[in-house]
Amino acid sequence: MADTIFGKIVRGEIPADKLHEDEHCIAIRDIHPRAPVHLLVIPKKPIPRLVDAQPEDQALLGHLMLVARQLAEDHGVGNSFRLLVNNGEGAGQTVFHLHLHILGNDKYSEADMAG
Ligand code: AMP
Image 1: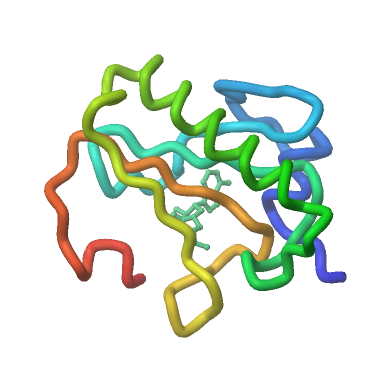
Image 2: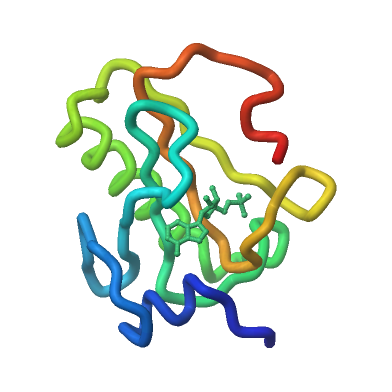
């Protein structure tokens, strides 16, 4: 499987300001924020795309959402945020290591995550 920048961050090979870390995932700020609060929740397991997740990843996927909820709350946007997963190149995915975008305090726009 091809390595990615997020794999390197997860393994500590590239320094990053981790906002959260547990056994299953980390969270960092997006380097090119597209909302006043733009965070990424990244599983340690290198699942390339959401469609590559397997039934045994069910608990992990749920965990990522609960961590996202907590992070949104901790960053003051607990009542107004979006969670977004770009799946595949056609949807604008650029890093092929699954991640959840937390977008807080932004105005909904169909196009804002398209690339
Ligand atoms: P996606 O387009 O869904 O694959 O999202 C990848 C996201 O990762 C983009 O929003 C990038 O701005 C962000 N990104 C890429 N490299 C880094 C990095 N080193 N640290 C933080 N965010 C990054």
